[in-house]
Image (cartoon, rainbow, N blue to C red; front, side, top):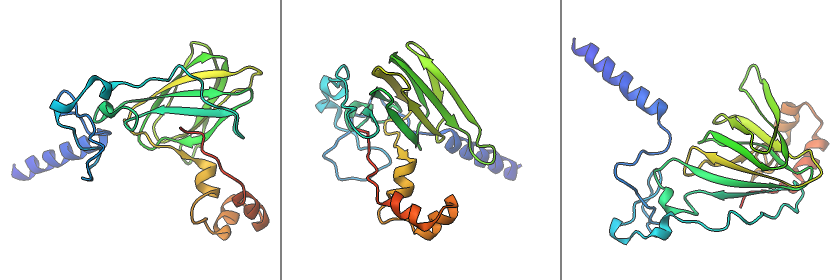
Length: 221
């Protein structure tokens, strides 16, 4: 009987960790204290008596981001770094601006699912499932359409039109993180061995040298 209770307790603990993402709030709010030097999973709470309305406020998402770059896109992320009141609430927001033929390149959010809606223009969007299938789910979406990108999967958005496009994305983490595939593989610091990359991508080492010499830009603000 005791062993059964222990097993059930263990399974409950494992299940709670399996479904957990951001830390859940244990009070109405936990506004991040950005002056604290204490390191925790998340951010330390500010004294509730010192909290103000501005701790839950951000202004400027109406202004287009500068998409005049090599990728032709700009991501304005509103996470816990921008709104301290998002701490422990498990959500953030992003505005994505696209120049004509602009791309938000293949990337991963390691800590969040993303749901995106188009405000202006049309986008070709998609994600790829994990090994071994590597199945692509892709679709052209237009103004008012919504598309979901599951947590941790490689995904992208591309403006294939001749006019600017704008999208808004919500993410299921106060700090979703982003790993841009090309940046991580070819722009790591220090660089990954060209022997490793040449074998992985089945290309010659000169190609790897060229790729690693490129400037891998970050379109996130």
